[in-house]
Amino acid sequence: MNEEDTQRKITEFKNLVEESDNIVFFGGAGVSTESGIPDFRSPDGLYNQKYQYPPEAIISHTFYVRMPEEFFRFYRDRMIYPDARPSVTHLKLAELEAAGKLKGIVTQNIDGLHQMAGSSCVVELHGSVLRNYCERCGKFYGLEAVTESKSLVPVCECGGRIKPDVVLYEESLKDDDIERAVDLISEADVLIVGGTSLGVYPAAGLINYYRGRKLVLINKSVTPFDGRANLLIHAPLGEVFSAI
Image (cartoon, rainbow, N blue to C red; front, side, top):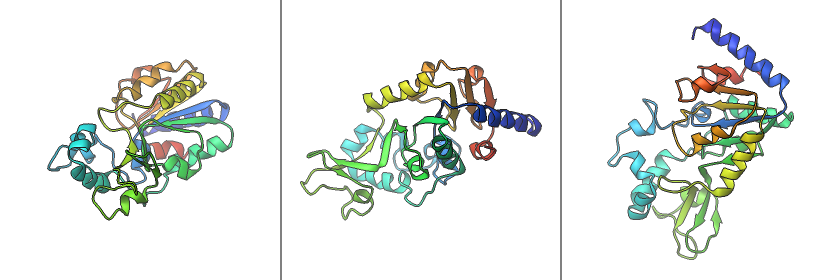
């Protein structure tokens, strides 16, 4: 896609947003890479970095149970970014919600940046690093329970292990989150999908519930859903959202 074609499509995107008041955004790691949080599958992503164990194995339920020390060492080092701040995409989405145009966000990210930007209707399919809970008594903790823990494996005052409220490999998405996401997507007039390869299921499968008139897909690389998009923009999210 040449620059002229990209700009034409961005203008079309801007006009579509201006004319719509029932928009839902479905986003992935590309929303937060512009905030300095690495994704998983790009050349510089977590899956292409060298560790003693493969990153995709470390963030599995089995690994968490069997080797919690190694899990938390990796988790603190590569999954938590407390200094990250919302990108232009996060901020623009919050503005659209405040204007009554955006009805909700369905995100695969776990960083909490949508809420930091001001968005209130956010479905976090994979949980959040900002929430943690005791596996024994169920008490909830904030991020500091992990970052400020004196032990490598954070422990509750009751003695139970504190687990991040994130969905690890081999774990299921929460039914309530799936239902909320399906409701938002199925009722949307315009669905904007951005910053995701749409290769991770069951999250990617939620797109199949969309029945609206305009599917907008914004991603720097090709996705399996490109052929279904009414408006396809291969460009950075920040560049696209800066136009609205």
